[in-house]
Image 1 (cartoon, rainbow, N blue to C red):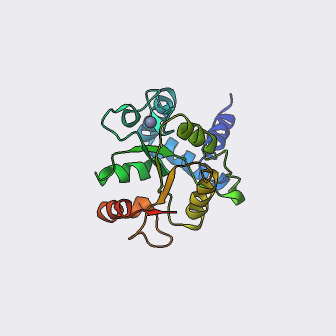
Image 2 (image 1 turned 90 degrees about the vertical axis):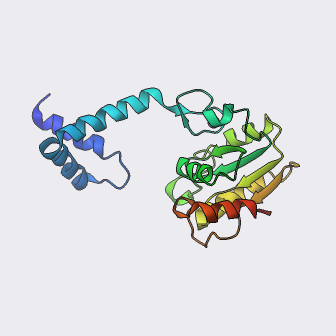
Image 3 (image 1 turned 45 degrees about the vertical axis):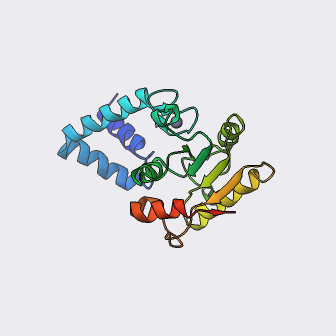
Length: 198
Ligand SMILES: [Zn+2]
């Protein structure tokens, strides 16, 4: 491989990152090669390691080294309540409130038809399977209070309409357009406690 091809292939690879076009990819490549070779090596090793070691938990879809993650395999959790969140960061936030002891499902996104993200991309089949195969009595929809988060919650509610499962939405304290990731854990804990049946 010639050096120009090598550089080109690095630039191409960097373009897989969201929001990185040809110009920023080139800038990043120069930066990594010229200014931060140690950081670049670290980044490359971490990516390889994460790709090899981390998969998705079969039950909650969160990243996990095991087939079933620690939360899903814990006997201390309430097996009858399932909280649906958009991203792993939202799950972490929920855990930090220490007010929720049920199970989770991580969508890894939100419905966003314009970006080509439909029900399949947010693993709704897996969610329905998960609910069918367990004795879930309540599903808490803890998607963000953005237009897309609300649409996602509404879509899931429709999917579960025919079941006997109680469906709730986290409530008070979360402003319109609010993203769970940026809300303090006290407010989030309150929103879980005061969730409303929908
Ligand atoms: Zn899990």
